[in-house]
Length: 155
Image (cartoon, rainbow, N blue to C red):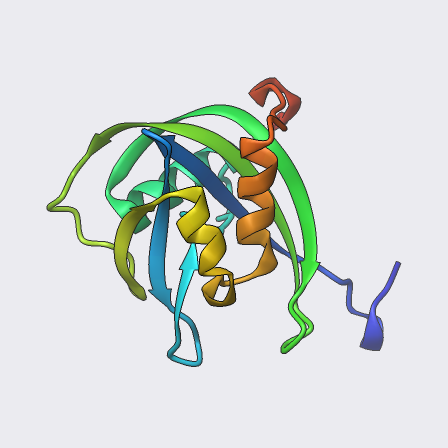
């Protein structure tokens, strides 16, 4: 299927991790393009020649300083940002924290990593970067988990 002007449509492919420790969720507070402080889980774009799982591990480390172990695939989410009409395809993973490097510099735009209870994150819903933040958390905490083997990178 073609898009306007003969171009092919391509969504932004992103990954996110839902990391839970002692009933709290690993979140990031980051600056949005408009300068607002928003909340997100560790998330970012898939890079060339990278598997979805590799991208999730990398983004979590870069944005929080935490190394994690992926435990399950939570889901794939399609969303269109209303203000830009950019379309996103997000792959969310459940993960458990392994170790933290507090000296690791965080990605540009990340103000800090923080641990929030699900209730605290839900109460701050107006600050979520997108509706994908809570949807992935709700699905993960609700038991929606698939084996990581569901996703395969074919050489």
